Structure formats: C-alpha cells, structure tokens
Length: 343
Image: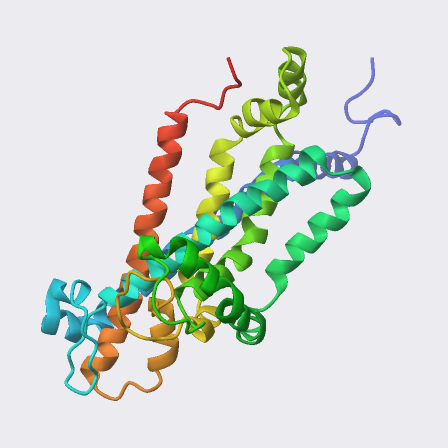
C-alpha cells in the first residue's frame, strides 16, 4: 500500500492540478462568452432595424408636421373653401386650389388612359409572343425610358410633340370628336392633352416592366391547361395569364399613377400653366406640382407662401387618397384570398 506522504510518479502534482482547473474553467466559460456576445449582436441588430423602420415613420411625421405648420395662415384665412374655390389672385391675396387639383387629376387620368393599354400590350408581347432573341433588347429599351430625365421629356415635347399636336392631332380630334366637348377651342399645343401624353410616355416603362415581371411568374401549367382545352392564344392570354395577374397589374398601374401625380418639370413645360378649369383638353391647365415649381420662389407675402404650402399638403393628401382607393380595389379583387386560376 502506497504511502500518502510519498506520491507516485504518475500522480499529478499541485501545479498540474491547478493548470487543469484553470483550463476547465476557460473551456466552460468560452461558450458562455460566445452566447453573451451573440445576444449582444442580436440585440444591436434588432435595434438598428427597428431604428430604420422608425426613421421612415419619423420622416413622414415630420413632412406632415411641417406642411401643416407652414400652411396655418392659409388654413385660417380660407378654411376648407381653399379646396373648392377657383380664384387665384396673388395681388389681392385670394387663393383657391381647385384648378390645380382638377389639372392634376385630369392629366393623370388621361395619362393612364393612354399608357395602360400600351404598357400591358408591351408586357404581353415581350412575355408571350416576342422571339426569345428580341426579349432582352426590347425590355432593355423600354426600361431605358424610365432613366431619361424629365426635363429631357419636356424639351422633346416642346420641339416635337407640341408642333405635331398643333398641325396634325388637334385638327383631326376637333373634326371627329369635337361633338364630345373634350376637343374644342383653339389649337394652342400647350394644353392638358400635351401634359397627358407626355405623362403617359413617362409612366409606360414603369407599368410595362412591373406587368412583365408579374406575367412571367404566372405558372406555365395555366397556359398549357387553357391550350389543352382548345383555347386560342388570345383566350389563353386573357383567361390563363391576365386573369391570374390582375392584382399585380393593378399594382403596376398604381405605381404609374403615383409617378404621374407627382411629376413636375415635364408637365410644367407643356401644360400651359393657366389656373383655369376647362372641359376641353385643348385648353391650358395647371397642376399642383407645377404651381409649386413656378411660383414658390416668387411668393412674397406670408399668405401667398402659406397657400402654396397648403397646395403641397393637398398634393400629399391626394396621393394618400389615391393609394387608399387603389388598396381598396386590390382588396375587392382578391377578397382576402390568394389568386386562383380559371375554373
């Protein structure tokens, strides 16, 4: 039997035992340190992402606050009558925003009437009927229209579009559709019609590109099933493709409408900038964005400046209302259910 006072050579000494204890403590502590550092990084990431989301809401709140604060004088001077009055007289400080609201809505609606059929047609052609070799170049050139600055569109409209309207388009429309009352009066060229056409050209790439992406994700078996049942190519596209993509197409139209409502420079250069309400599309008009671009730097009186800021607030509210109505349309199409194929 070994004597405890004389340890065996294979038994660890005090220094070895102490080293083992330190090593075991370090090994057991390292996972805890990794967990704590991971939790700290996770919390920091969550805080950063939350701050990004709150920053967007904060910017929106600041915009609303500033527009409301700066338009206080006009609001107290005119009240709700500001949005229903048609007089715009900076000299006598009589202001009404109805002509600008009318011009914004009419020009945007006219742009949608022109652009939506063309955009959907381009998207259907590139996804369903275009040869594969031409799809990429055609899509590139269509999307290239979105990269052109708006002032370039305005210059093109001044030197090309307006003379074409005066010489060819407006006389033909006046003879054939003058009975409607929408195409009457002198041929100014600078008119609501010119603004609608230039806006349509500017929103075509937005609507067509998004519509093309939506059509591309429609399942292929929808097309094959329609063709197997004896449908023609047009019936297959109408029933098997467009019907399943209608909510996405509506979303593309919404984005195009948002671009049309806020467009400033190109519209300012061709719309005529006259604060009047006319039933004829040949007459000059004004939009809310255009009046801000033209007159904000020239506003001298406090009420004048406040009225312009209130127009900016009105443009903001119109954008919210339009997007809200678009959301309602999407809900009415989907009814809270996923899109289904044809029965």
